Length: 131
Image (cartoon, rainbow, N blue to C red; front, side, top):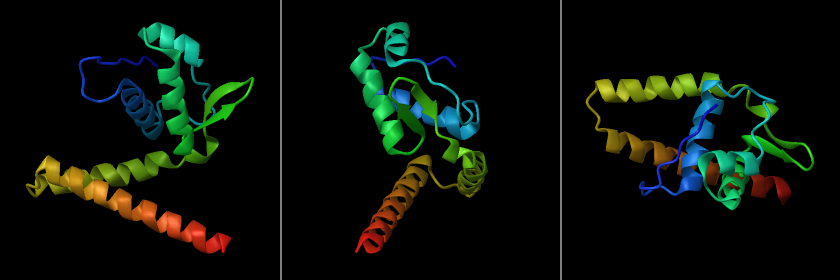
């Protein structure tokens, strides 16, 4: 898998990496248990700082997309094998919204709102389980 960054973009470089890797995982291009490039190797190939790659890998780990294993590297999480099914549903919903004339900005806002609501529910569920 080849990655590219746009230093002129307003999107931080680590976030560009997170988005590209997330898309590859969701699309199945990076299947479960795939070993990711070493942070130093990826940083060198993109001519960016290794800490930028580490930041991206950390965000991906926090999202449950990859596992960081000391001495073994970073691998795509096995728990994410079902992403392609969910991705298909999301693509279908976006496609339907577009065909009804909903502007892309409104779709993004709706998706962001749904993500915020889902994150809040997950946090509330975890809190109730701990208490």
